[in-house]
View (cartoon, rainbow, N blue to C red):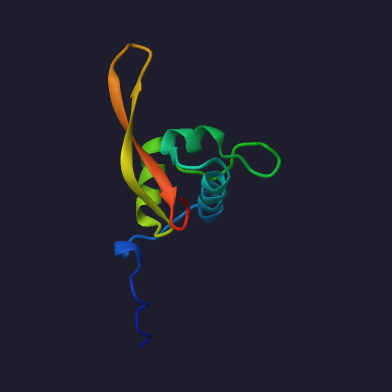
Length: 97
């Protein structure tokens, strides 16, 4: 009988490793960013969107929350086209000033 491996990331598997690596490179190059900015602007080496990427901005934020390379320590206020105010989490990488 084989033993089970140790659970990581609170028991959840992390998907989209290439996409998360590009998010890391995006923050390294451009500085702290919101999940919606990364969802819109992170592209593959050809400049096209990834075929396998998170399905929404919220799922991207969940992936970044579970990845130990990313952290958030503040929120940014934004206004949408109807004039209502929303707060977005600002994501940073460890070792980045």
